Length: 271
Ligand SMILES: [Zn+2]
Image 1 (cartoon, rainbow, N blue to C red):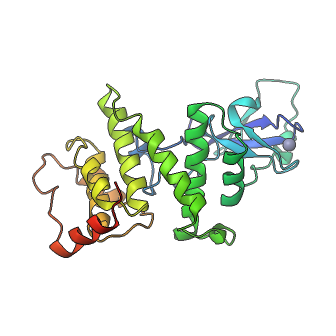
Image 2 (tube, rainbow, N blue to C red):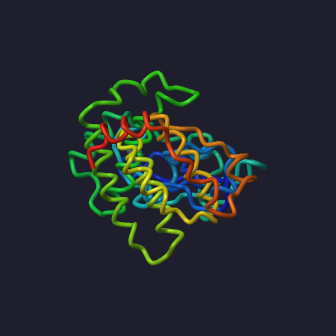
């Protein structure tokens, strides 16, 4: 498996060939991924993949408009962007198939909420993926390249708030993991969700638990600044700062907020 490569899978409902991009995961603040991406948002959205192709992610067939999980779709062949080489595992598959394969349809935020209420996600992993996809979709209207259909639901909608609270709960179950890398991964994720819910004090207390020598320490610091500013909008992370200015000690990480911002945080913080 390599970045920049796609699988072509068959839609489980109508067998239409669908392009499945590789290289994304439900929440990608793992150090190996951080080193690779050029653009990273605080909700885990990246410059590539955009959450389309992770095996546990939900997808929508562009032909029959039905939803499916990537790992439930049969792989048809492997397709590499750079040299247009087709690496078919099934020699009977004609190369012309790649001409018909299309990227999946992009569900709207409202469609994601409908899938959640319909019980489309059966396992914890699927719930995490589906709710993360809905979360990212709700933030799309606030990124540099906005989608015309992304801003259909308000940032303060009850559906969005319920989704973020459920997602924070799911992320919280990873905070006791014995693996520090995984624990920090969920710490950042939960802190970011709380920040976007306006629960700045709770977000800050989670960010203070991040291993200050890890790559995520700089991400934590960028999120702290947004908390101090009482800013709850999704943040495009400064990748140069993350990759070059890796903090070596805790000194300088915990700049105290001003009295005025602290009182606002406590006022808006419910937990
Ligand atoms: Zn289909």
